[in-house]
Length: 299
Image (cartoon, rainbow, N blue to C red; front, side):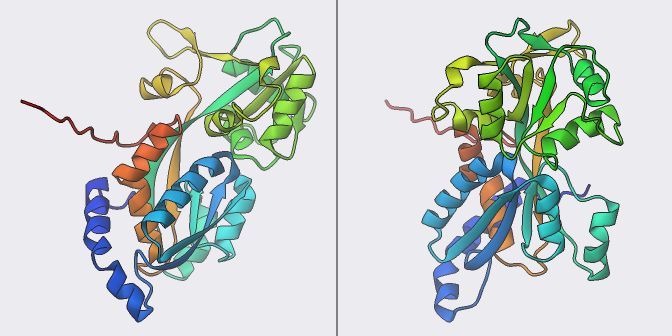
């Protein structure tokens, strides 16, 4: 996958064009900091994108980001149908998905801007406090290696697709799998019954942590990382993502398929620049580039 422009260049681009954005807005011409942009995001990371949008629009008042959140497959279809110019996903498009853009000679600008983790939760009354990834794969194949049912946020979810890719599973058996309509339904299911393992993103979990009323009935499961020199069970956190100890780590990409140098570039620059990376950090996720710190030295 080709990633365009170093992040430093994007930051300089945004800084340089910021000074002339007011002149562009007067003429009514759309440039990298003026106009409207349709963005479709994987719904498992929508809370982060909404935070980014809010700060971006407050900083650049002539820019409008029209965001929507959908399961991964629907998000990609939205991009393919031209209903959005930018998609924010946990993977790039595959060869078949790229064909329509290649036929129109549209070259994407792809930027990595954050890392997220997949969180596994269970009811606090369940005995197990940890899980092995291979057991999850076997349950997805229909093999009862553990007395659990796996609860996903959506049948078209990027989280379910992540495990399908991990286990090289062509078709998931529905024997020990439930698919809900959103992450909140996953939490409700796990909170109300034992014998369930729920799946959601770290971004979603941290968002619900203060608002979901039955969070006291839910436990985050540790996941065994067998690739470490000394294998151990690890919980998802900003720290365990940064050390690569948490095994269910995934990268988040901005896929800009806007054919011209428009607001897609400006929003991408913001996400990968210092302010956007600080928002990622504050949200409890891992930035691709760690924001700098200013140290004031007093005599």
